[in-house]
Amino acid sequence: MSETWMRWKSSRGSAVRGQALLFVLALVGCGGASAYAPPPSGVTRAESYGGYAEAESAPMAAPASMSADFESDSVAGELAQPDGAMIAQAAPAAQGAAPAAQGAATPATPPRAAADDAQRGPLLIYQATLHLSVFEVEATQRSVIAVAQELGGFLARQSDQQVVIRVPAPKFRDALARIEETGDVLHRNVEALDVSEEFRDVQIRLRNAEVVRDRLAALMAQARNVEEALAVQNELERITGVIEQLKGRLQFLGDRIAFSTITVFFQPAATATTDQPDVFRLPFPWLDELSLRSLLNLPYQD
Amino acid sequence: MNRPFRLRSTAPSLTRVALTAALAALPLTSLAGCGGTASHLAAPTNFLELDEPGESYAQRATSAEGVVLAVREVENEPYGPLAFWVEAIKRRMRNVRGYALVEERDVRAASGEAGKQLRFGHDEAGGPYHFWLTVFVTDDYVFVVEAGGKKDLFETAQPEIERALAAYRID
Image 1: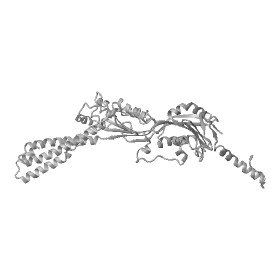
Image 2: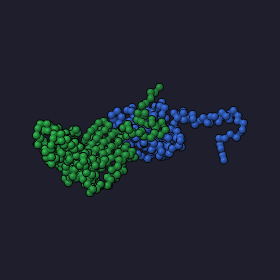
Image 3: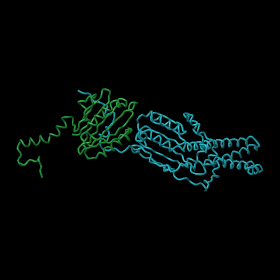
Image 4: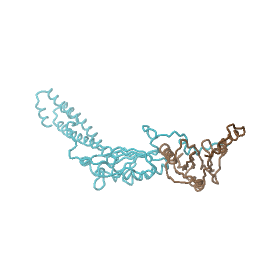
C-alpha cells in the first residue's frame, strides 16, 4: 500500500489522484474478497459423527431408546482445550438466563486461536430437537435443566411447552441420552451443520479487512488536507464496522460450535410446528375418541 | 354335515318363521339388553356403575373422587389382531395426543383371553393424570377397558382397579 501511496503522492494531477484513491477505496470496499483462498489442502475432514453429521429425524418407538450410535467424539473433542475449557466464548450476551455453571466453560483461548484449531477438521454445529410427551412437564423440565447444568451447560430459554438448553459440544451425546431418560420421547431430530467453509471464509475476510484498516490508518497519517483526511476517515469507519461484524460472526459461530443446542418440546411433533404433516390416521373414529377427556366426561343420568 | 339351525321343510309354517326370527334376534337383544355388552367388568366396591354409560361405552363406573372405569366394545371389522390394535392405539395416543407411554404389560382376562395393558400418563388442567387402556381382541370385537383419573386419586384407587381388571370377563 505504501508504494501506491507514494505513486499517488507523485502523480501529476488531482484527477489522477482522485481516480487512484477511488480505486484503492473500491478495493478496500471489497473487504479483501480478492484475497480469498480455499481451505488448506492438508485439511482432513473427520468422519461422520456417528450418523449425526447428516440430518436425522424420526418418530420414536416406544419405549424410547437412542438408536443412533456415536462412533467418535473427535470432532467436538477438538474444540475443547486440554483443561476442558472451550475454544469459544460461552453464551451470547442476549442469554441472560445463563447460570453460574456457564462460567466453567468460559473460553481460555481467543477466537484467533480457535480459528487456527479450526483448520484441523470440520467445524460442526450440533443441534437437536426432542418432542417429549405431555406428562409431568414441570418435573421433566427441571430434570432437563439439571442435565444441562451438570454437564457444564446452561438454560437458554424456557416456556410452558418448551425448554432450550446449551451444552458443551463434547457432552452433546451424553446430554441427549440423559434427556431421553426423563420422559417418553415421541420424536427426535438431530442435525450437524458443517460451518467450516463459512468459518474460514469469515476468518480470511477479517484478516484482509484488518490489513486494509492498517493501510488506511497509514494513509490517514499522510493526508495533506482536510478533504483527503475526511475521505480516508470515512472509509476507515466503514472498514471498522465491517471488522466488527466479521468478529461478531466468528464469535457467534464459535459459540454455536462450542455449545450444542438442544430444544425439548412438550407436545407431539404433529402439533408443535405447522410445517410438519399430521401423522397418519387410521379410518376408525373410535381411535380418535380415546382420551381422558372422553372417559371423564360423564353423561347426566336420568 | 350337520346344520342344526337349517329348517328341513321347504314350506315353512308360521311357527317356524317366527321361531327362526326369534332365534336370529336373540343375540342382538341379549347384547342390547345389557347395554350392548359382550363382556363384563365388575365395578369396584367404591365405584358406582352408571345406568347410561354414554354411547361410546358399554359400561362405565366412577368413584366419588372422579376416577372412572369404562369398557368400550368395538366390532372387529375388518378383522385386526391384538398387535394391530395395540400399535394403532399406541401411536394415536403418543404421536397425536402427546400421552406418555409409562408402561406396557401383557395381561390376561379372567375368561382367558390374552391382552395388552398400556399405561399412559398425561397432564390435564395443569396436573398429571393416569390413563390405562387394557385391550383384548376376539374374532368379533375389540374390547378396550379404560381407567383414568387424577394421578394421586388414581394411585389411591389402583389396587381396586387392578382387581377389577383381573376379574374382567369376555362372554
